[in-house]
Length: 338
Image (cartoon, rainbow, N blue to C red):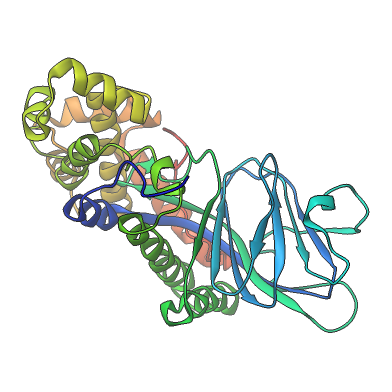
């Protein structure tokens, strides 16, 4: 898209939204390519990230035009798309890429810290991986991504260091490695989201949560105060929209009405508090906006299929199993029960 994007979120609302983002899981690998070598990734349930380190290559995401990968270029690919990455060579033609003439090596992000593709010394390298990021917490930030995010950065942004440090944390298996890796990769995504204020690339408009400033403002209110006394009328007043316009635009952005989204945010907030095991059930209910434990329990059971006390017990068992197995990939129990 030529020129400035039509929609931009305000700095205040972006700050609120960035403050609620969490990385639930991340797997990363460094890939070293010989000249002309090709890597193939099958379709995966999670979005993938690719960051150029040295040399140049091309990434082709299923259904999209080829994108050149040079140092400090960050690409986020939608989930459920196959991907081919090839190191550039003197005889390489982007228009011919993907016709099956180049041998491909299948690649599973995170299954090894380093992959070497092709014979000879490396001429091109990048970090690739998959991740799960949530807003709120409660809504998948990149689930609705329809087209790739492509954004150039610079060496001084130090995204390569952040991703390398995260990759090390995932492989050394020290205590807290998973949370450390998630925190480091979160900084990468925060740097990307910050670009939504200045980038002239089309991806700025493709985030359904950010493309409509009034709706983004309403959502920021919901995620920053999930236990607040929020109503459709109050949200309409806060963003200056009529009820019909607000309901229509909110549903278009999220695929469901505002009170349904608010309930999901409250339940996910409650789930995180239960997993932390620091508050009583009654206190968790209050933090989730419920004055009655029975009402909270009914709603929680509807969303997660279990009582809050049982959820807390399962979260505790899951944490113990992760510690014993050395699996430092962070996760939240029932993270897909939405």
